[in-house]
Amino acid sequence: MSADALERIDVTVTFLEMDTPPAYYPSLPYNRQIALLKTRAIPLHFYRYLQDRVGRKWQWVNVLRLNDEELSAGLHREDRDIRVLYVDGAPAGFFDIKPHLPDEVELAYFGMMEHATGQGIGRWFLGAAIEACWSHKPRRVTVQTCTLDHPAALSLYQKLGFRPVAQKKEVVVPLSFADRSASVMR
Image (cartoon, rainbow, N blue to C red; front, side):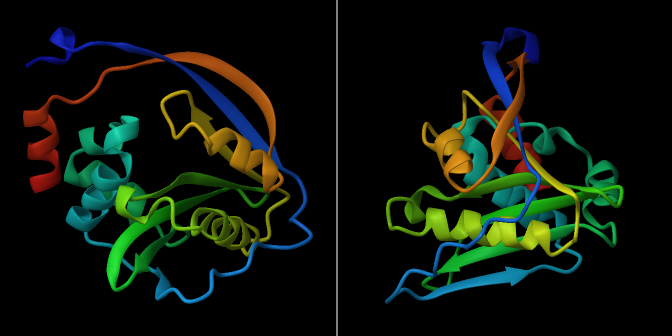
């Protein structure tokens, strides 16, 4: 099915930023086997897998449309900071930090796989992402969310210190099943 034949989805994108680090970060949940590992030279197929498994429900399609060269050029920069969440030994989510110039860091992607939600991990995981952003010593940390993301995303970002600074309307064209399968299988 071509992109023209797919349903187009109107979304509102909210841009948020934080000018100072939080006074505290949420603590790691007790009695859980949790690991957060920073990747080095993440394999493209694994990054696509994370994007698909975390973002499928939320229509994260932009990265899945990139060819290997385009994706590699962005992912394998020395300043890129990608960390993968594991719960009970299995991948459960990730975040992807993009430093922009010396004064801004973008939390470009943040999310958990469906099997990891509802376990009291999300607030801690977002706190760990924010702490990782501030470890790059920026003046400002930015993130964006949209009306397709988890219904609690915007309020959670605000509870942990982000403030909305702008909004815009966009249109998302979902990937067909065949397109999604082909991009994840690359």
